[in-house]
Image (cartoon, rainbow, N blue to C red; front, side, top):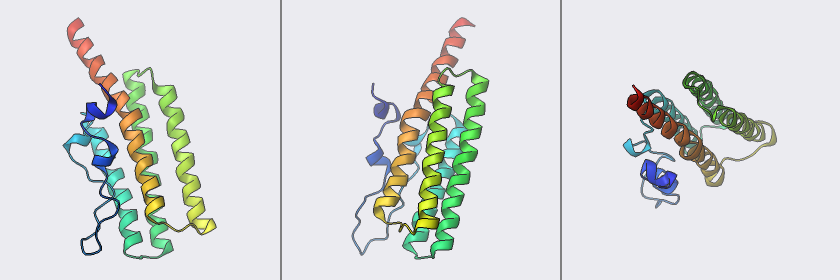
Length: 166
C-alpha cells in the first residue's frame, strides 16, 4: 500500500485548484478534511494550525496586505512549524520512535529552507505569487505525507503489537 493510499488521497486532492476562474473566489491552498488525519489528535490539531497559517499567507497576498503584513504571516507560519516540530519530536522520543534521528534531521532541513524563504522575502524582495505559495504548500504536504505519515503508521503498529503482547 502506498503512502498516498494510507491517508486516502494525494497532495493534489488536498490542495485546492491552482487556477480557479476569475469570477469564483480563490480557494485556500490547503483544505483540512478527515482524510488528512493521521489518527493522532495532537498531530492533527498542529497540522490544522499549519494549514491555517499557510492559508493566512495566501489570504494576505491575495488581499494585497503589504509586505510587512505578509511577512508577519510568514513568521507565524515559521513559528507554528517550529512549535509543531518540537512537540512532534518530544512525542517521538517518548514513544522511542526509531526514525527520530532522521525525522529530526528533516525538521532541521525544513526549518532552514523556510528561514531562507523568509529571508528572500524580507531582504531580497522576493514576490509571493502562485509559484512561491505552491512551493510552501508542497513543502508542507510532502512532509505530512511522508515523514509524519511514517511516524503515525509506526505508532499505530507499535500500539497494536503492544496489545497482542499484553
